[in-house]
Length: 208
Image (cartoon, rainbow, N blue to C red; front, side, top):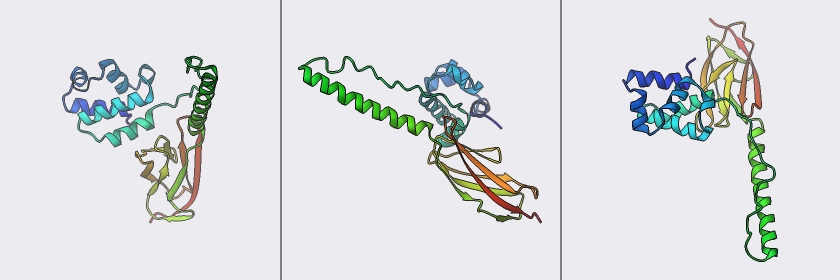
């Protein structure tokens, strides 16, 4: 299975574009382009910044940004969320009467704490997962079975250990190879924090 870096490198070489040319045209540092193509995520900035790099490179090379970003979301390793429960707001509203100062501090602390809690819960909870196909006890007469559904756009999806690309809207659709010994399809949606949602569907395979 090609990584997003390998995919972009193959397209770049196919079109005869050097890394220096790509740096000059996209304004992305050559070191960052090297790291993306080689999958060295630890040498790159934050997730959102690298996603922008990948989108710009794909657009310049004439490839689909949405498809490339889906591959990037699949490949980018989850990172631990660092949350500071006590934001440094000691200097906020340092001017004015004492009562106004204390009231301002309290409002900001509550707002930041609420925002951080909301972001933290959204990050660590298991992703939603809806499976449209296959249905429970579905009769399958071909070796390729359609697996489709919807999850969170930032989640990664596997069906019987086969990675499936997730679109920007969270939809996924792919064909999974089955045999007459296959009795179940297990679909796993995994968040960036490593939380998983699993749906299992029993199937009956009778290949003619």
